[in-house]
Image (cartoon, rainbow, N blue to C red):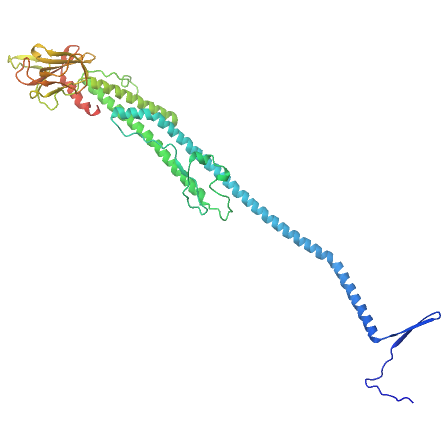
Amino acid sequence: MPSQRKPVFGKRSEPHTVIIAHGEHIRHFTVRPWMAAAAGSMIALLSIGYLLATTYLVLRDDLIGAGMARQARLQQAYEDRISALRAQVDRITSRQLLDQQLMQRKVGELIERQEKLTQRHGRLGPVLEKASRIEGGREQAPLPTPRPEIRAGFDGGGAAVDDFVTASAYANATPAATPWPLRTAKDLDLSEADRADQLFVTINKSLRSIETEQIERIEMLTGEAYETAETIAEALQAAGIKADVAFGEEAVGGPLVAAADNAGFEVKVRELDEALSTLEHLKKTARRVPIANPLPGAAVTSTFGVRRDPILRRPAHHSGMDFRGGTGAPIRAAGAGKVVKAGWNGGYGRMIEIDHGNGLTTRYAHMSKLLVREGAHIEVGAVIGKVGSSGRSTGPHLHYEVRKNGTAINPLNFLTAGQRIDKFL
């Protein structure tokens, strides 16, 4: 009899047996507990996998849509940023182009004014040279340099750099050569345009100052020329010599008021040229007229007119002026002219007569020595002889006469005129 054993962990369950019969064939297999647990676990895993796969498939479209939307938002943000940067670059470029056009226009104006000043220079050159020649080296009107130098460069910080270009070179500058390189608005120094404007204002003021000073100097030279010419003409007329000049013959006049700037400048230059021509003509006339002192520094011992004859001691007409001088003192020509007589002439003793034109002649008598011959052309102030006492004379002196068409006239009028206008000659 089999021994009976008591189970230690309770009653042991028997495994299940599965019998499969198919005709005569009979199969059976035993289902172990671990096999059932493995099958359940496999089914549970499959179920969980199916649920996860189903959930993924359901949520995948939403995830893809969200990702695409996010990517679209990022792309739109980048495109907006690029558009903003492009617009900013366009604004900066447009501003630089406008600034460059403005600068080129201003430089063009400066070049035009410089060309006008250069033309004025060429127009003023002969007139001022004439004024310098007539008036003995007066200071000329201010003239500009051939080209004004313009500071056209600025560094990145807005400070001026040592880069000088001419106005014409800057006017032909291309955008690539512009002194304002392309920068962002943050880096752009807005004071550069202000500095350039200040520079152009300074240059404009300088050119305007030159133009104004030229006009003022021309007006001053014109006024001085007319004033000097009028003084010489009045002095000559007081001496009985008609000054052959254009101004003062008609009852018209008044200050010059120009209708336009350029036309006004031309008119002022022509007026200055006319004044200088008048002055030059009067000076030439005055140098031919015997108005210089023939014996500078000598005392006058006898004047023109009725006097007591030094020899006969009775009233007589004196046809000239007597100057006391030591024997051998140099006698000078009172004006330019041609020697028509040089030799002994009765009571005049050794005498020289000079023809000054327009019927005017001068005589120098009682010389001790003659230094020129007949036919010689004499300049004013030239030494023509020496003081003596030849002829009808009581002592060494110079007898000086001025004659108009052969008639003796008072030399004092000519000497007075000479003293008045000597500083202008």
